[in-house]
Image (tube, one colour):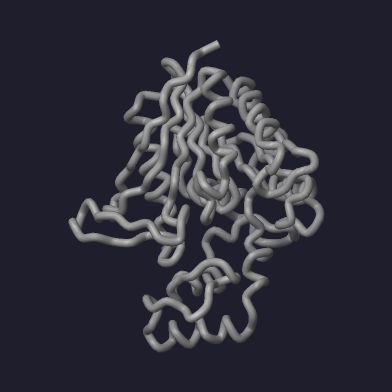
Length: 289
């Protein structure tokens, strides 16, 4: 069995100069890597399953990259590599239009590292970002996608009241889009008005749905194949996780080429079942070889 090596911190720099943090959990002399794009606030601390995923993959001879995007934390202080100025990125000021360059920066890292096989995974909103990226870029560096509990965003934005929506509109209409709102969006995301507007009115990551007749144009535009995984208690799906995945898959270019995996008795972050999810990921990556 391949041995384990020490994890190490990673950073990648986007075209705009923002620096994204991550970590490499390495196996011995791996030629395959799974890159896991985080969801909103879906970091090592809130989602410790990433360690289980990484170490399980490592024991199978596969490298694992924990890859943060702009929203892994609410606030992430750093220095912009282009301007040299200090900046604070995070979910508080995320611009979803930067999704392409965030994911592209992680893929550039993997390419430069010399991996022969790159699996692009994403959890929750990170899965939606993977869909968005692959819909726009038929990137030959990516062998397969792995969508882990993609996020039905309506489940989140339905928590925003009419009064709160009116405040967001008022801020934006008055040119105050860069100002923070006086309340946390959805009850847990303190953010500027422009970020809230994108969540509520112009969300380019709103690409998977419970309703079969909703807009799946991004899903349909992907040319990669892969797998989708979800827990049977996932609350984002209004009680039908299996149907949710099946509906997404039905809109892909080649539904029969994709595998759907249900993890019994767990929810959106795989409490108590993270090892089962990790084992499923290893099985999938090996089957694709």
